[in-house]
Every structure is written in structure tokens, then in C-alpha cells.
Length: 163
Image 1 (tube, one colour):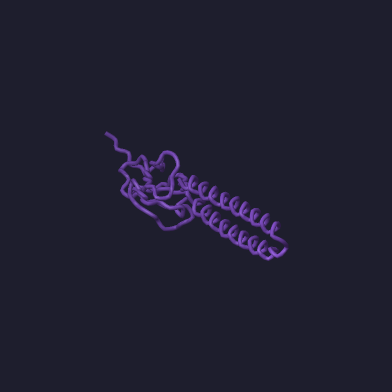
Image 2: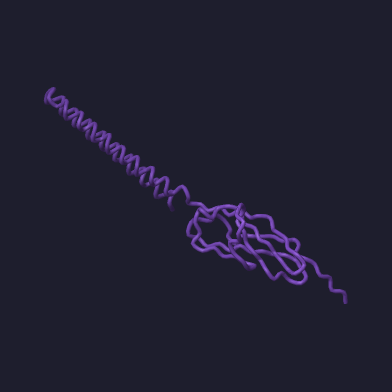
């Protein structure tokens, strides 16, 4: 019987996850190939990096974060040679969640200062008469209530995004 030896060929990488990958998830990358003799070294690389990020036919990443988004590929090697797979794209969602919350907090802080400014402005104009002061207080309370409502709506919106 003839036993033909050859380096790895048809090398491919795949991701175990189906659907959206979010921060904190775990992902397993798998490298497949054909060779004779069998592959004895599998190495994993992230695109645009020269050193390997892992080894083995499967490469598991736990508690994933957005910094790991990008392309990953494997290199399969036996004593007759090696071959690289095409890169698989790993996209981690959740990057924008903290930015949205920060924006909402900053926006509410800005609204707080606007409310204070309006109240101080109205207070200064108070000397113009009792009826005018009463109307200004009502307007100030209405503006305060509307701005407070906007802040609560923004906070509720951020909670929906973070889920």
C-alpha cells in the first residue's frame, strides 16, 4: 500500500458562536485541515500581530471584550510544511453601551446647570411684581419637570440599550 505524505492543506478556521457576540461571552475558534502525517502544531494569530495568541486545534477565549474584535487565523504544521487559514472575523458588541451611558450622564449634568441658571435668572427678576413672580415660578417648575422627564427618558433608553 502506498502512503503519500503531504503538508497541511484545506486549512480553515471557524467560530463556535452563532449570532451576536457580546462582551463577557466565551468563544471557541477551531482549526481544521487535511495532512499526512497529521498536524502536530496548530498556532493562532490575530491579524496585524506577529506573535501567536494561542495554540491547539481549538482556541478558547473567555470573558471576551471589545479589544479582541478583529480577524483571527490559524496555521497548521506537520513535518512536511505548514499552511495558513483564511481569517475569521470576530465582532464583539457592547462597545457603545458605556459611551451612551456616559453621554446621558453628561447630558443630565448639563441640563441640571441649565435649570439652575433659569431658576437664578427668574429669582433675579422677582422684584418686578408678585403676579409676574408667580408666573415665573410656574414656568420654572414646568421647565424643571420637563427637563427631569427628558433625563428619565434618556436613562430608560440607556438601560434598554445595555440589555
